[in-house]
Length: 359
Image (tube, rainbow, N blue to C red; front, top):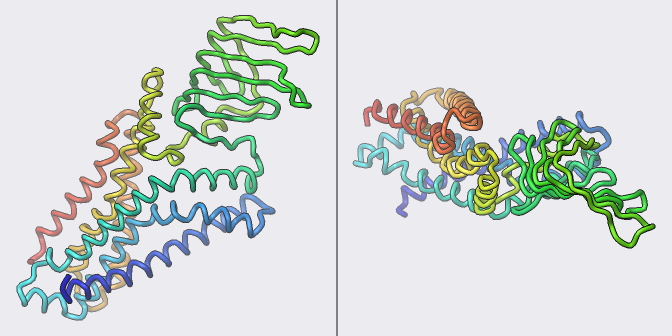
């Protein structure tokens, strides 16, 4: 790394750290205010613990925005001071000037992806535990998605499910335990398949085992179909744990394979799986997109205009990303295409604007 690379890197890191602090602070302030308004009586200590677990996820979500802002501010600063003109006159190409930025963005993005893949699931579990137990105060809705079974507690009942559809309306391999107020086991119900219709569950191909204190042996009976009323809505079961953020990529891959073997729809999980990889390169794509706008702006009074461009590009990217992921979730696009199409389109747009530059 020569002196010019160190100078460009220094400008980038100042903008990156400053942008990170600004965006994360704004996000935390807005989200914390929303949390305190929606859930009254939440103590400061609870909020601090909650956002301590939430902070890595917030930073990862804002990373493409921060990378774009740092790139535009770095190049705009050099452009305004005529330093780009001097470097071009010395024979350096635009690619060579911006190479340190691209390298740092790539390193940061890959580092964030690896860190979130290893630490993200544990942080998500801690965040959700505090949210359901201390903020929302509904501990029965907290569950942990594991790679083999989903455990859930509802009043005096505990059950586990091997697999649950992404829509939360079909489950496989249910075991349901009912307890007395003294937590003595009263009844156990098993079912090969469950159709979740709100608070009414239709159990198919299972058995009922009754445990009584008057008999030394439990009584078991088989059934083809049986309807039971649950205390919690099935939508709460889905929203409380069926998110891919609680699984790393390897666990999510195995989770998808098991659901596919069970005959359940896995499109939503496949979209999440591929989108994690594509989002790791979003910062690099946004960096490439910011370069032509920074170089092409006039030197006088262009900084605030560039900040406005950052906001516009971010909104455009997020709208495109949300639209593609929604289309992928509903099966209109393949999971791979839904995850990677926003990056490909934005990279193509960046290439188009780069070709229009004089240098």
